[in-house]
Image 1 (tube, rainbow, N blue to C red):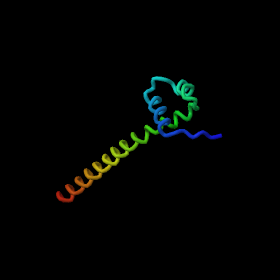
Image 2: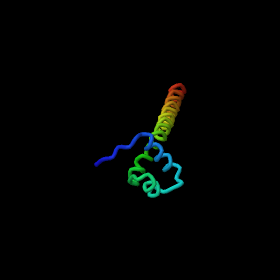
Image 3: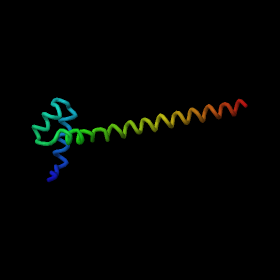
Image 4: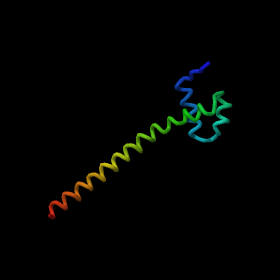
Length: 79
């Protein structure tokens, strides 16, 4: 039977896992959940990190494109 956990419980366990004071196995024993489940809940951290990295990547791509355009316009102006 599939057990459903409350969001607050998941967040609490995920925060403990992110702190890395205990291993996933120790947390699994403490909270009576499977270690793989804890790793999945810990993956929520990547959602927040992923947004920032994605924004940084888009910003870098935009800067590269603008530099390319400036270079192209400079060449056309010199021509």
